[in-house]
Length: 187
Image 1: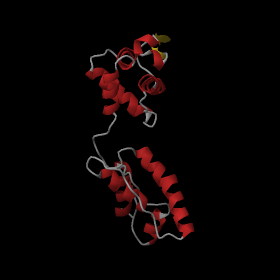
Image 2: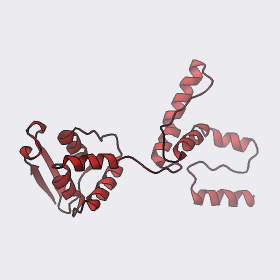
Image 3: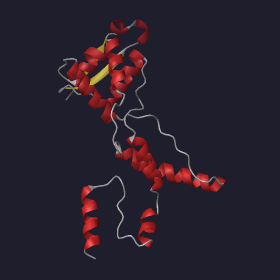
Image 4: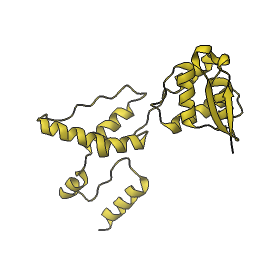
């Protein structure tokens, strides 16, 4: 069951307009509501972040600030408190690094982005791709990008044609790796 929650524009600032939010009865909220509040009320654009990441961050900030729920944090703190909104915005910076940290991003790079770029480079006569990665905590994202770029479509067949016993694509799934090793050892 949903309930409407209206925020008096005078509470935030006359020039920032009204923010009408919807939060369900258990106090959660939708990512688009969060994006809308941060943009309309505080002028902070967070639309480029993954919705699940936004909600996890919202829940962490709600707990840290002592709010009962993510919904109440949004309606009671973020809407009214510029300092808290800026703290939330700062908390969106990722301070950790891991190989293939966001598998869906690397899957998209491998299946769509990099093949298209490689094809364009081939058609224009360039020798290859030059890839740049933004700085990260420990560097795993840059290495993940390099491994993704070097493991393109057709690699499995090329590897097997060279006489290798198996091929496991990244990100490596433990069960697939075990199965591939088992098959290679028992052929």
